[in-house]
Length: 224
Picture 1 (cartoon, rainbow, N blue to C red):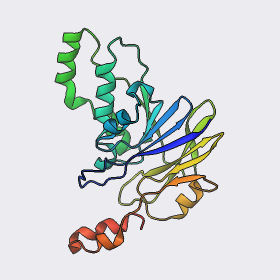
Picture 2 (picture 1 turned 60 degrees about the horizontal axis):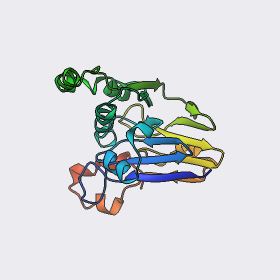
Picture 3 (picture 1 turned 90 degrees about the vertical axis):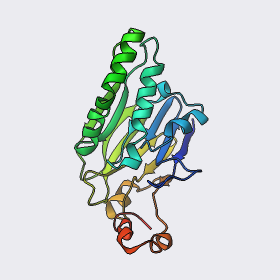
């Protein structure tokens, strides 16, 4: 089998007509993994003919709005479309702290909507999200596996954001690394050692330096 890597989005917090928010999809056989869920991720998955029930797991790199804003869309759609109540919960794998706290709270603002739909449709108002939290490791550590596929997480440098990680996907076909947001650092070098494909976020420093001075801080915690 072949490992297929698709960038579902390469955008930023600033909307762009041609770019969805950050996200990478990795497929190996029936295993489908989504890394980060920026705006319009669900639309991109639909364009790829990937149904929400086909997702094996979702992985979050850190708690920044542009990387997680599409998660609620995916998970509520998973609940709405599970008419028979037969779909399995989707594991949401994320570093403990602010990121898992967000996942734990994300349905609370939809309490009334869930209750109304539940009473009308006669099913539990419980979207099926299974939080799989982990402490940010000092070195790459396995956080999820299925069959021949395993995913390791490693610390990256995105300060002042706390608990940012990148991921390493290992399949019999090869190794894929997703950086999330980070500067160039030794931690990413360790996570990426021997990788066949690296999806590494990067900014255009020349564009950043054209901005007003008080908005150039982005260069402090992104790769160039």
